[in-house]
Length: 219
Image 1: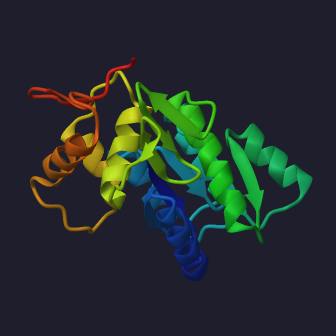
Image 2: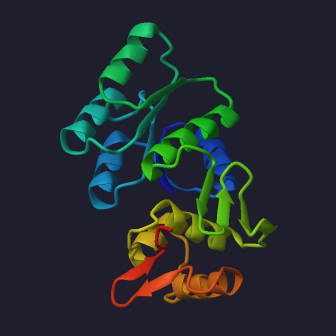
């Protein structure tokens, strides 16, 4: 799951980024509204966290521009504007959720999980496909009730494929979900993670679609 954070307070942004990364989300950060719009056009995130008091333009204007072209992108507003009229303006303007500062990081993570479940059409914190279960609240993966020991990247890759069960994800799709901007990515990184996962999962659980990518079929 790739999240774009738009926040001009660098200290706050750093705390949010660390909290999100602990939950095995991929997160990138920009400080200005126009930078966010540019990145959304080139590399759309799965979820956008949007501050309203940005240095170059109001966050509500950013939201309006997004909604002119992108109706499906989940947007969570994170702002110090706590008046009812502000909340109504944000929600009526197209935001999916609204949190006021100060806030608890645990609540922010919980709200992100709700938006994540909407994206994947999963109604609980547990994704079950065949005899493999993945629980997002505990970051735990089990096969026949036996807990697997997965690396961070292996977990993130398996989660991306299970959330999109029945759909083919390309190598580029998976890299965007696993790595933040500036991270070094080996040319065969995805192939290596897939290879390691296959050794821990049931036979043929992750299938290769030659020339296209990888898929976990719905069962």
